[in-house]
Length: 162
Length: 162
Image 1 (cartoon, rainbow over the protein chains, first blue to last red):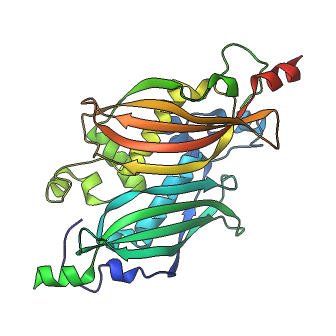
Image 2 (tube, each protein chain N blue to C red; image 1 turned 180 degrees about the vertical axis):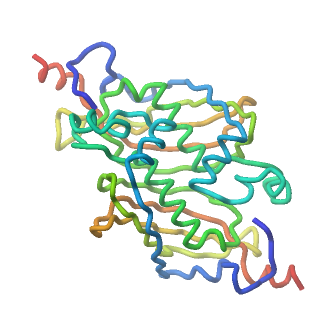
Image 3 (cartoon, rainbow over the protein chains, first blue to last red; image 1 turned 90 degrees about the vertical axis):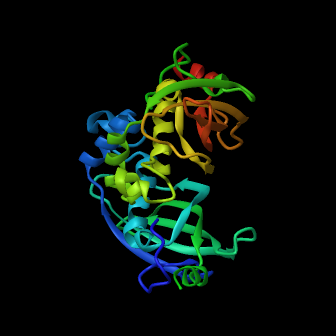
């Protein structure tokens, strides 16, 4: 959220061209984290208790779908967001949970730029559509998410700092 | 996730008709919770540190948008989900963050049934589109979310248990 000049470390709108693919992340899922998240935000039995979970259609402890969403966000942060000249997330267009996430899984992320356009009302900003996929260690896709974010343009940053 | 008969406590597909509105929740947001969530999942300075946050466009500590998403889910759980014959979330269609959430805010939720239809492939199940709105104590809408879920039908549950 700081507003540096057009330095080389910071990722601007121009660093996210259409079709670009980034792969990153190695997020370890374990039973302790699954239960800690569930206690706070999603206390359903198949997220909380191994024995109870075996009796459900989940067949054993699984992570809350919302836990997977925020694990993806943490991978995004470490992967590129911490260096990105973000002006905020405009919103989410779609989330799909496609496979359960279980203790022992190691998650990774793939980010594809689905669209990138300058803002019409703010020429110093650009709008990027991100398409995320989350995979487990077996290469199974466990979640997809589409997110739209507002970014500072490099050209505008260079003008500001000159 | 247990599969009770068509008892009166459990909420089935038929208990979520088109246009129905539920209001619930009184979720207290504080700086400690904002920072604890951010440390794990979204360690941007305006979610982590009061002083750093004042220097940003946020103007002070604000909750991660993803924190608001999972606070809504907890309100949903307490509000109706814990009694619902859920067969799982099919996905999210849209999330919009419309106002910042700050320490001291008290959040509440409004849930409107935007669509409800029997499943074509599984006559024992129904599909419900939920439209959620999250408000702060000033009545400002801070977030909206559209979610699609699969529910057991009451008629099918009655047959199973007979």
